[in-house]
Length: 566
Image 1: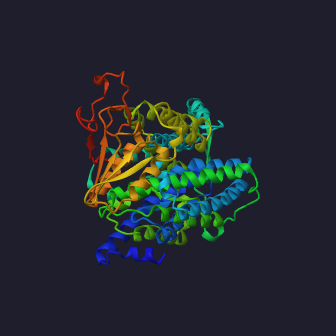
Image 2: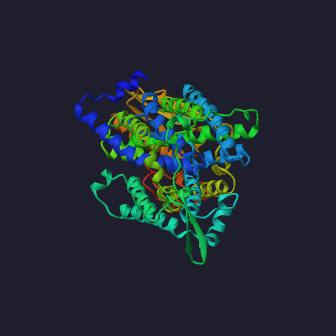
Image 3: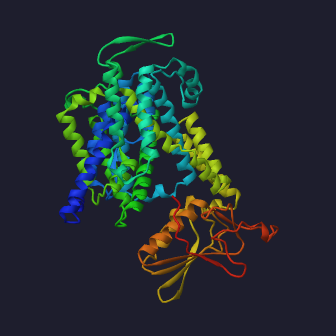
């Protein structure tokens, strides 16, 4: 913890400290409405989102393993938290929330154990197709649920697919004033995303959406109960359409209920939360590292420990679980942050605001939060995800679609497992050896000087990627390593992409990681990081897809392309 405090002032200059504080205050303006909106969408009290942002900023900054990430409640966990509250409450949302808090505590402890066991790198080996499918499903779920809020109507469907089916008919009974507030918020978001300019990094978009909603709610007199008539229907307009937050933060503290700890459904949600929260945090931390102008790397194991500490503590007082949140982290980098002081500042600012002026939040209409969250859901489920995964290859696209559809029809963990099984089945079909599914056969040869060659004979898939990486890291003292994959029957996309990233990382450290394939390795698609398999002798040479990574017809190919696929 002391080392993290030192990191906050690592640069030691007044300019650096000032930029961190300014960035933290800018992120505070973004995080405040987002945190409340995420709590409402999760079926939790709005205070749960505020507690998460406060703890994620203050406690997360002094225990974390990253430099520029912003911690807090995230859209990616809405589905997980809502499912836990509904399943554990069995129709009683208050009881469900308290039982879900107990699950947050246990999940946090498991995350701490993950970090202590040095399992931080596990999230990096999950196929990108499954991750994209999971995030796209979360985006669709968020948009579907929030559209009902934005239109002032209630959903009756039991799952997302059913809710999507009933939305067109129920939209005919929309509340016009509620819908207008949400529409104005969405128009502001659209205008913000349409016009480019350096000014955008100084504009806290969610705050502007909130201010427009507050103004319209005042105009429509949401503060007092009255009835309006529209398209032949009557609608009640009242303070129930506004945020309701206790004026004292101490009154929002809720203790967990561990009464269901012996039930299977309780542990199902514990496992789901600990896995999904860990995966999302690791992916976000790794993504933010790419944006770091100082090229620093996060300690992923410490990140897991930090998130576990925060989530266990939040479960004890009534807060939502947190992750390293990508949208706020990106804004943090754009605003010039250099150290965890920015994360600390954003959490402290939220705490001070809620203590000083909690009643101001109760003027925000609920439809405004829907306007903030719908674009977040759309960004997660952007149509480009379909084109991207299809371009990588059929197996990638199949796993993506299966993860997406199964999640929408069942739940997140089942969807992720379904996608992983599809990827595994495809790899086995294309030559992966069941006996080597979690391990790699390789031997080392010394070439000259400190140049080493690692000869790999096993098929390489996402399931044995960590074993391969361990073998590479065992010889990290070598300034030049040749990874000879000519004896490998296949290399899947996840492994190929990861090796490309390792090449880029080695290059930034003044080292060389050289990849050797053989002339019979054929890519599955034209994508630069497509998976490879050895061509059958019956397949004509002309059938091979030419790509930047393909070998010459006379010798093994050395791939040193440092491209990183976003």
